[in-house]
Each structure stands twice: as C-alpha cells, then as structure tokens.
Amino acid sequence: MPSATGTLARALPSGAVRSLRSVRKFVRLIPYRGIGLYCPVCKRNSKKFGPYGVARRDNAQCMHCGAVERHRLTWLYFERETDLFDGCDKQVLHVAPEPQFQKLLRKRIGAGYLTADLYDPAAMVTMDVTDIQFPDDSFDVVYCSHVLEHVDDDRQAMREFFRVLKPAGWAILAVPISADATIEDASITDPAERLRLFGQVDHVRRYGPDYVDRLRSVGYHVVVAGPEDFLTIEEMKSIGVGADTGEQIFFCSKS
Image 1 (cartoon, rainbow, N blue to C red):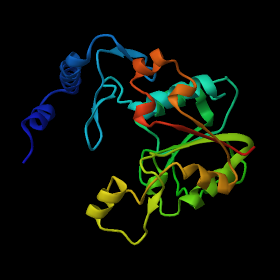
Image 2: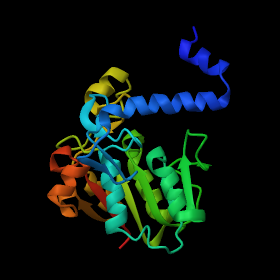
Image 3: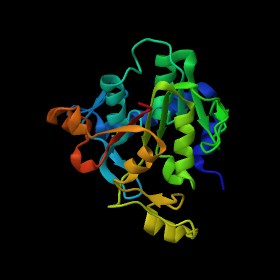
C-alpha cells in the first residue's frame, strides 16, 4: 500500500515537492544545529553527529552530508598528506564511490576522475575489481574504501589495483579492522553465520592488523596512519574521530 507521504508527493507540483523536502530536512537537522563538532567534508558545524551503523553507534554521522568517521578522517588525509588536490592533472579511479565524496572529487579533479562499480548503474564504468579492464599504469590514484571485505579473492583485487597504478601512483585501500587477526572461511554462506563472524551478511571476512601483510605481499609499500599521526587532539575531538574509533588510513604505493 502506498504511503500517505508518497501519495501526497505525487499529487503536488515538482516545486512544491522540493519545498516539502527542504522543510523536512530543516526539521530533521534541528537537534544537530549548533557548534562543537565540525565536518571537514561539507565544512559545516554541528552540535552533535547522528547515530550510524548496524549497532547505531552514537556521534558518528554528519547529518548535513552523511559523512561518517572514516570519511572525515580520509578527507583530511587527502587534503593534508597527499598530492590529490595539488592542481596537477591526475587520473583517479574511485571504486564504489561514496555519495559523500563523489561530487566533491569530480569538482576538484575534473576530467581525470572516474567512478567504477560492479553493480551501481550510476557509476561511470562497470568494473570487477578482480579483473580490471584498464591497461597497466593507467592511474595516478586509486581510492577504494570498504570494498575488499566483500570480495572473495581480495588478493587478486589488490594485484589488479597495483597493476593499474602508475609507477609513482598511490592508493588508499581502506577496510574495517575489527579482529585480532583476519578471519575468513569461504565455506560459510549462511547469512546469519556471516553476520555473526564477519559483522555483515555481505562480508566474506573480518580483517585484523595482518591486513597490511596482505598488501605488502602483493608488492605495495604501505604506510598506516591513524588520526593521532596527523591531527591534534583538539582536531580529533572536533571531527569525532580518535584512536578509540579504530579508523586507519592504508596508504599504498609502488615504491
């Protein structure tokens, strides 16, 4: 049965629908308006961040743009620790593009920005990360976040990213680290058991700190950075990220 809201929206002119959505967004944001926290992705202040995730963790999501902890940390890393925004022409591959980043990266990078996804029809190209259709040394930057835990053969995906990176290129291959050592078992297909062991029904493993060893075994030089490595304590508090949130950057290069 269609909802009353949906029926009303279909009956209204498009301009009225946009106005209604704006009002709803304004009302939804009222509890979060204020100062004390800052989102570096959308550059807005908030009194608090909203809940997010399966466990609905508190103080996680910017209610203005949707960025969660890993997005806020990664964006500051992009700005402060990489050459991504140095104004030089770059070929950038963004895998499974997050809406929090997509428009911003397209604007900042321009014609060299390419989005890819195996299932999302909105991506610019359809791409299997274990069989990338681009030639060797194609990209200056590869950004792939929270994808490899869904991929059966993650090492093959790592090899493919390595192959398409230019010799001086770099990649950020982010995954959640939530175990003492990586746990995986290809025979487990039951959704409930995957949820119990891997944290989500569509995950095929739970990574531990030995994730770095997998990257290095492919040939990457890996630098692991936590928020404390490039942010002050005040900045970590401001963006709602700290050593206790477990967020890390895996900066991978060919040399």
